[in-house]
Length: 139
Image (cartoon, rainbow, N blue to C red; front, side):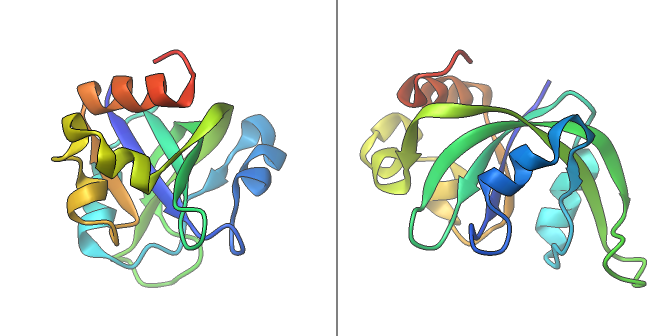
């Protein structure tokens, strides 16, 4: 299993929207960055991810699971763009803010710290465990 982080503006698609989709989940569509798209192409069913609210909150607010591997993004006819489907697994007990992540030197190499603009990014197993611990959820 691999770990990821999915960023979204809550005003566009927030954690509550993701929860409302239930077990059917939702496409993580609209990504128009080649690096983020390539990360989605690496994902496998069962991989886990952090659901991260960008903009004002800048915090991990939930845990998601990949339920469908990369396939054409239904929001475009351009064959270059793929997406995965994810479903909500659980909210975090304590949101983990970007400031909290930056303050923990064990997370200094995390992609979120180094390239905070990337909308889909990998998370190492160690980073996953640390952030889960900070969030009050079982890794």
